Length: 567
Image 1 (tube, rainbow, N blue to C red):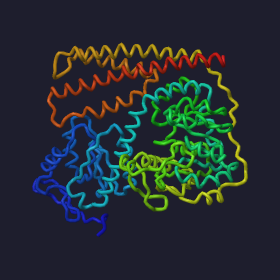
Image 2: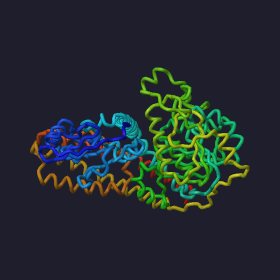
Image 3: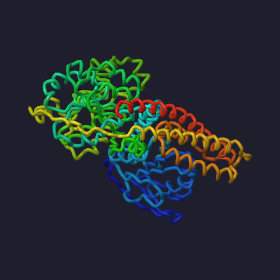
């Protein structure tokens, strides 16, 4: 009998309730499944967590877990055997699936960096579906590790993202939305990324250079330039000074620039040709704010953790033709970090392997390659993007090395060239429209935002005083709660009219994750938790506003200088 062949018996127990027996294993007590479920739920419930229950059965445990919930926890039930048993009206997220690939797609939707996760296996499901249960645990481990990488990135980068978003506005008011490039061509697109395997492909790239659209992923531009190859488009999303340093000495004459509003603001100065902006899905909450500045149709693109993910998304956006990935190792091929002539090139040491918790995974040739969770998360992003891009069937991984990208067609780069590249020159979009935005109106908009920040500061300080003035140590008075709610509504109203978004993400994550209720919490403990949570939020507002005010003032100064040039 295979893992997915089941003998299912339904048995009515002494209490008149049905239990289920599968392959000789009971899913619930045949004596008193309700009592068993209550005891099981009390033992495994963790307050404030998203609970993932592997095995739903007749739903007794799911219902008992929900009865334990105290703070709007989420319950996800995976049922790999019994179909149509999870009752949606019970507010349970149902995943009735026994294919790990489909399960992964669904879990990715429901588990974010804001979730603390508690994984529970219902009795005997690990014995009935041992392989699937192990695969599910591995899947969740990978997902949670990737979430930690993303959370650490947000915590480290939020201030720079806020700064770059504002400073890039100086350029965006003159540049074009990437919308003007939408499906402008059916020419083959080659995306060059900076993995170690890129080096061997460069002679072929040089040979066909005039007959393809070549996109460089961020710092890969230096490897291309060293080989006397200039790309058509360079994509940048990275915010750090180190990213700017990749471009500081680059001699670019023909390349066009495509940038996320998080990209380091100085990079734009290195391009004399047209440039195109976009927002990433992660900063979509800035969409209305940005549109109100540039008065353009701003495009929000799916991407992931790397510039190469966005280059892939952009390639699919601009062409209906075939797309090839090269240099997309996402692994330390031959223990190399990057392709030769990348400024970050180095050989990975044993010490780094241990420090970064690197691990082996399936490679391009079904071999074993060395990677880490940051690179692995980028692999997952490519696979999720491919799933969304199925309308374009001509997408190929031609890296010939590195990690295996599941569901991508793998062919040698030479075969891609032979099948899809012709000796026809490629015409790029030439921007003829010059924006005529009023710098004075834009400056006035940001001066108004500065006033809104002052209003928020007043309200936040008032809320901090209200918290401190509460006399009770077990609950807030109704009058104070009413004033706090009123002020919070005003804070949200003023914040929505500003760029104060990205910089608040780290504090929002802490508010969600670091103040979990206890399973059994006294009134005093709950009061103290909510008090400290609120205080942290308001103190976070004050710090975030001070920095954003500074960036906004500097943006106004930059716009005044631009105004002198163009008006």
